[in-house]
Length: 184
Image (tube, rainbow, N blue to C red; front, top):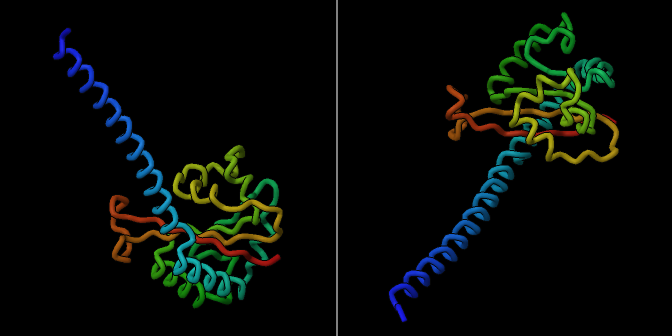
């Protein structure tokens, strides 16, 4: 009987078992790491507070005007600095303040939408194509509960470096997301 052949086959089998075990451990680690990253960047407590106070600030202006525009064809409204229909002509100083607030908080995107975002995440209408091209935002929107709650959501995408400074390039940029309920 050839013992060298048996040792070789035994080594191959043990190596295959170890390799399969390492692949399983690695895949579990990657899944756990992705969940932790998502937990850290989605609805972080600091970003939730910032979003809540942004909502409080915006509700003191014409946020109802934007709510009225959301319907079956227009599923969301972008909110951005310099928006004339939010502050009106009488609030020029507020426009400048909002622009500074936008820059200081490192806001990338701010959207007002219905509480149920399933129509946006479906990406089946021309109205949502600009949002659907943002993979980070769509991944976040898919994690939100889409219960039958009425009202609206203010969804904010923050972008900053790990140090908290503004992004200088997309390579060193981290995206954080938060949302709060607006009205009933």
